[in-house]
Image (cartoon, rainbow, N blue to C red):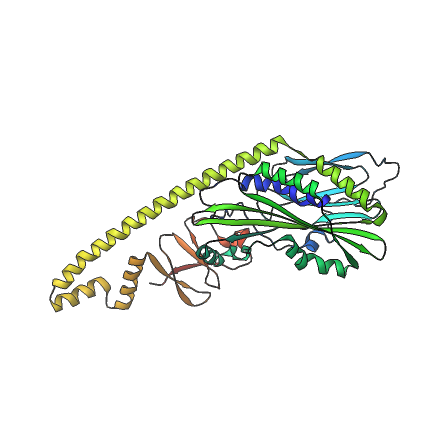
Length: 407
């Protein structure tokens, strides 16, 4: 059926690149990952996707004739894959980079004879951490909105599809099973991923008073990714629709099925994805090694500071009262509260910063060149002096200000 092409095949490139062991899957790549709340209406209302007119004539076109439609990556110009459709169907597609800025998924729309219209919704992406501490930590980041436990496609159907179809004048007929297509697509996913990846689908049939039939489907892909503290569940889904006159419903589904089995991958694109996956794995390894080295350096500096402090304390304990007062004044200053705060920060590897957006002070982990904060107290550590979060497309819905030390 068409919805399997619409959602599952474009996602194979994501699965093939994401579905590889990495050093630390907790690290979200800000250049690769972006999340959008765009809706179906945002992407299709008044938008022909490629700017061309939808009108066409199906006269004199044999029903058995086919044409090839290619899905293209706008960034590289490469063909991702191709599919054969009936020649009298109008197929248009648009790459979307709301999940991964280098690997597209696609919005696809089809129009054709007998009132045929088929389209998919933008893919929604979620993660779930089995480690409760890791989940809580991630909830306090800009990615917190992505956290949601895995649900089954039927729940997505009840949340997003059912009311939409009823309000459009359609009556629910029931669920439809297509085990042959499910098996085919699961085999495709299995061949693309080295992880534990699964595909679930919930296909429903509908009819309205005008004799038009419809299929509304939820396709959901999930996979386990390793993390330092265990694993996390990555899952994403799309809702796909097909509308056609009742007399042509079964034949249309059969054409959709034929299109699925005509799907062909582009070897050049597969090589590109494999190379990209290798580059990301190497970058994750490099980051992990750098983080380990930085942690080791911080621990050594902490112990050195602790030992130095112990030596100073021996002198303090042995000094007379007058010398003790003089020593405290030299080390902590007349404003001893500020000095003590600085001393505690040194021991805890923290810094105290002042946020002008809220007028409050905050404690942050020490060691970064600069810090940025928003009005909710969320902060970003940064060592790249050319980076400005207000220009980051992943954080464009917040105002960030560079904060200075409070002491």
